[in-house]
Image: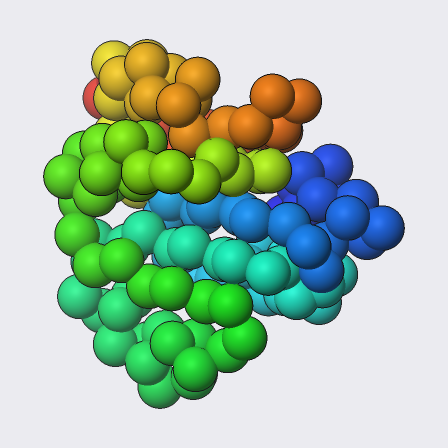
Length: 131
């Protein structure tokens, strides 16, 4: 499933010059597939969970070409990315135990995060009590 997300977000022909944003590293599956297609020119990963951040460091993610790891809750990190001068070609959202309201809050940032014609996808990881 994550490989299909990566293919839909970032066609191989565009991968090496693309700028991608992944909100929620988790196991790093989609990030691995995005890197295998390019790697992207800029690959920003936002992750809040300390265990996931430790695993990222152990697996060498901060040293991969073009990768920028932003530690913190997406609600705190994304606004500064949305106000920055660069727009992303692709944005993927896969956070844990958040609600539909959180996903809607992200939608408010998408027009400033994505370039015109950019792609967005998400994985439904809503908490069971928010369904």
